[in-house]
Every structure is written in C-alpha cells, then in structure tokens.
Length: 298
Length: 259
Image (cartoon, rainbow over all chains, first blue to last red):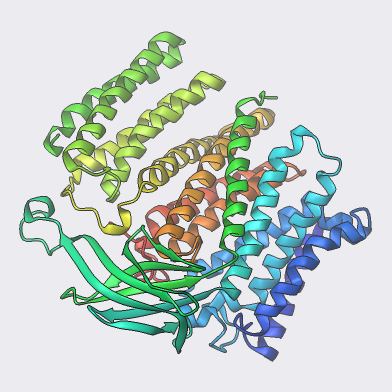
C-alpha cells in the first residue's frame, strides 16, 4: 500500500481536479484564484512546522517517495500541457470554460492540485531534512527552498501583478491601456511617445534580397505619475526597460511604417521575491556541481 | 572568418579528436589530452573567427548551435575522461562531434550579421553556451544508459549507475544555470521570468525529468526503470531543442522557435 501511495494520491488529485473542473470551471486567477493562492501559500509554508513530519501522512509527504511521485505527476501534467496547444493569455486567467480544460492548463484544477502537492512535498522535505541544519545540507536547502520560493512567488506574481499593453503614435499621450483580459483600463500614469527610432541592418549585413531586419527600435517617452510632480523622459528599447515608481515599461513592438510603438506597462511587487528564489536556485545549482565534482565513485 | 574555411578547421579538429579517442583506449593519457585540447583549440579558433566576422555571437541559428555542440562534446568527454577515467567516453564524444560537424558541412547555412533586438542581450551567449554544455553532458549519459540497458551484465549496474549519477548531476547543474540565465533575460526583455511559452514548457519538462531520475536513485527503484527515465529525458531534451519547430502544439506559438 505504502509503495503505491504516490500513484493513488496522483490519481485521486487528477480525479478531484476533473470533478472541480466540471463543477466550477477553470480557476479564475483574477478573482477567486487570486485570494485562494494568497491563503494557500502561507498555509503550505506553516503546516509542516505545526504538524511536524513524523505522522503517517506528514512523514510520507516529506519523504523521498512523495517527492518522486509528485515530480512524476508534475512531469506528466506538464507533458500534457506541452503536447496540447494552449489557448491565449486571456485563457490563462480562467476566461474559458471548456472541460476537461487541457487547452488551458494554467487554470486547470488537476494541474494546479498536482503542483500544490509538489509544493507541499518540498515544504515538508525542507522541514524534515533541514532541522537541525548542517553545512552538508546547504545545497539541499538552496535547491528546494529556491524552487519553492520561485514557484509560489511566481504564482502570486502572475495572479496579483498588473500588465497592460499600450499602442501609441508619435506625439500621442495616453493613460489608458489594454489589460491582460483585453479590457481598456485607466492607469495611474500617463505616457507620451516623443519619438520612435527604428534602425535596420544594412543590405550588406543582412544579405542581398532579404527583407529588412530591424537592428533596434527605441521609444523616447515622457512618463508622468498622477501622484507625482513633473514627468520624466526615458529611452525604452528591447532588453532595456524603464522604471517609474512601481511601474516598469518595456518596448514590445512597432508597426511596419515605424509610426506607432507598443509598450508593455507592468507593476509587479512580487517580482523581486521570484528573483530571490531564482538566485537561491542558481546558488543551489552551483553547489550541486561542486558537490558532484567531489563525489567518489562507489 | 568565412564559412568556406569551415571544412579545413573541422577536418583538422576531427582528426585530432579521433586520434585522442584512439590514444585513450591505449592508455596514453598525456597524448590523449594534448590531441583533444589541440582539436578543441582549432575548432574554437573557427568559432571565435566567426564571432568576430559576424560581429555577433554565432548562436542564432540551428547550424550555429550545432557548432557549439560539436565543440562541447569533446570538452565534456575530456573532462569526464580526466575526472573519472572512462576510456569509452572520448570515442562517443568524437563520434557525436563528427555527426554534428558533418551535418554543418553538408547543410551549410547563410550566416549573416543580423541579430534581432531581443537577442542583443548580455544574457544571450551565456544562456545558450551553458545550455549546449548541459546538452552535451546529457548526450554522454544517454549513451551510457543505452549501453547499461542493452549490453552490460547486471553486476556492472551499480558502478554504471554511479557514473550516470555524476554525469546527470553535472548536466543538471548546467541545465539549471542555463534555464535561470534565460529567466533573468526574459525578465529584462518581456517583464516576466517565466511565461509558459512552448519552449519554456519543454525546458521545464526536461528539467523535471532529470530531477525525477535523481529522486528515483534515492529509492530502491529498478535500474531498468531509472535508465528508461534517462533515455526518455533525452527525448524530451530533443523536443525542447529542435522538436518544438515541428510540434503542432508549438507551431507559431513560441517566440523561441528558430531554424
């Protein structure tokens, strides 16, 4: 029975997910899901410390068996996601209601429940292994805590962040932009496109007879926060965003005649936490390499 | 540096690598290292020359990534040979480097200087180079897994799996680093570390699959099953690397799709 617990838990979660999918439809990350994840994450973090890791269920959740089974199931649902064409951005936020919902895996209950099991497994494993802490356990802690932080903060970030697309002509000043769900919303800032400079590779660089390849497109923008005093001017280009208060502005695209520029305007308070989780994972990967190079073959 | 010169550099390097594989079987270690490093120096000279003449890292097209893969295979082989003294590894790495070089010789691409704005980032070169190194490592472990699965006696299995562990753990370190470099780059370019683009989904699948192997090794799992996971992981890796160009679920959906 213990040997097959991982298989049974996985099947149970998939079935439960399908039932929830049939009853409630996909999880709407912009409303219910947003609050559910805000409650679920602290619970997942705290629960191992409250319950300990020695009970029948809690001991199993922190075990390698649970870890292996949860990775296998996570892999399986992610393969489904990779093989089935996913719907667009609006669908990621629970706007479609198809059953079984495999075209919208990020809002699919089975997918979410399996990933929650993975998170719970990591949380219990950290609790089980890392107390008491020793130097030898540091790579384990970095890899597991880093992944946990990156995943949880990443989900919270996706649910709670604000992302807008703003397409504007030269000389135009806008404070309205299109949200992820396609709604036009008013932002607490205004952006004026002062200039758009598009440069192309020469025919000698790109090869004769080929279509013009853009070398760089740069938007010169004046940004003014509603709550702030005078506006500030920035040059925004690909890989070089501008930052004004809590807003980040990215160069996203331009039209064929280089008259309009499309900018992404994003506010995401959780992004530094995701970044910190990824840095922990980076340290974990380096420590895994160092540890492996010292391993003896036996 | 012109692509027309590639055959001269490639053949010189391949001859050196074939000779190094031969000397490895003979146990002439110094000779092996000298030949292998010599071949790599010649091959790298061509890559650097291309980099300078194109005025961008030669990492944009499939042919250019094959160039790096053909370079990293002997490098990985030499490191493994130096660290764990596997005589067979250089024969494998040379054979694979030959295949990838041959593809580039038979299917020469148009190499121009263009580099789309999104690729003009300091993250571009480290992201792809580290990934290619990890891919080379996983190529080596796949051959080892196939060898253990079909040729070896069961008595050799524990040592063989230990060898696989070392290669997987090293490859996974680099795969993780490459993936994280990509995440930091995506954050700078698109304002999100991860967007579940088809390429990213398959990168996650590959990553999870190798981690599945590492966790399975901590349990009393059947060796055959673990080796099968290694081979399946390499299939996932191929889907992630070039398979998504042909995958119906990814066609036209991925910003990473390139030929």
